Length: 462
Image (cartoon, rainbow, N blue to C red; front, side, top):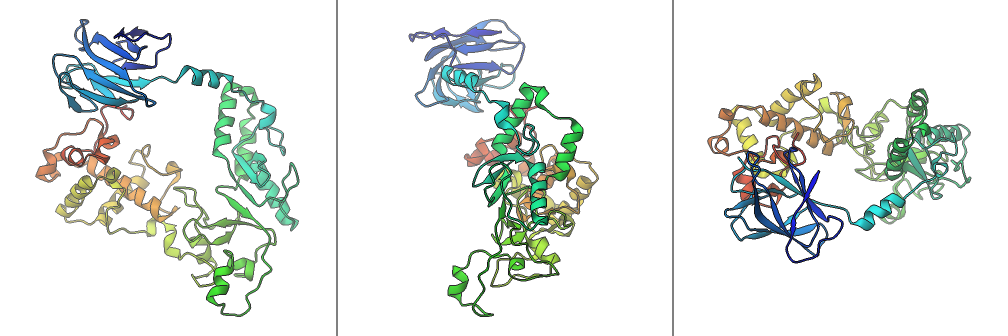
């Protein structure tokens, strides 16, 4: 159910280019069909009386408009006060209150509609399922990976098993479809989204849950793999010159010589460490983690530590401390990303911790115990595989900082107001809480309002 505003000179079109969506679902959307639209609608939930309270003008830029306050009082746009006869630009998602205060007035969200031509294009897009099938199992892809340079696509489980067979035979990894030598293979998130949409449109294309479980158990490709032959080039001396070292490509130490009883196969797959950019062999059945659970990026610190390889000059290798279990990590500071990088909230959290006679590590350890005992809701946790993370999980430095920031959010949000410093306790909560965008570019707003709280408005409000 929708309503239409009144035209202010420009000719209305058949299609609405935007609309005002009331947050109170008892009221109708207001469609905006012309470039200058007078909005005449209810402004209070307690009254059905309508008022002309603003004009919305379409701007030249996509998704942008200007709202002119034509009411007898101020209105609010994204918490900013717009006086009578004032104007301000609004974007898709802007929240508007047709009165001077939030209480007692309706709230609207400005929403830009997709252009008619865009909608037509979306309707015309079609995919033949025959072009979305793995040439190994002949079913629609599952967890799609793409091989390069030929760019053919396969199921992760199917191609992982294909690689294992090639390695057992000490052969090049050839593309199962065109027989080109594969140099790289990685997950293709774009095609994975297409595959998921295809299965929603036609469930008959799906495969039994038992088959999916078998595929998932075989899948071993988490990040981009580099597949190449072992380098034949040898250093001219035991201690290479700087010129020789700089001219060499990144080398895997186990390609050069056996270490710990293992030497890379001639055509073995390799991972490139995200931190040092060095190479390590891809050994899927090894019980040593090669990927960070929080971000799925490869890190070599745990692997080379298990092989007793230390950082040297000939090959880039990370130290063990760069990639260790959460239980072995400590922190001495509040991470920069904590509280959405709001330095005022970080300072308040630091003062609260000091006031309690504790350190950041004390608080992080205390709240990680609660996390490990599943006493904390993990839905907002900014890490992949949040439900499977435990004290023994290996994570990189960046993901550990994200975890500590997440725990400090729970520390603050459960803290009674009278435990906050007096200046912090006197602040009002921001309507948009931790999701507020204004705190990132408005220093005064970031300082004046409390943002370590749950949103009561906006897309994150539930």
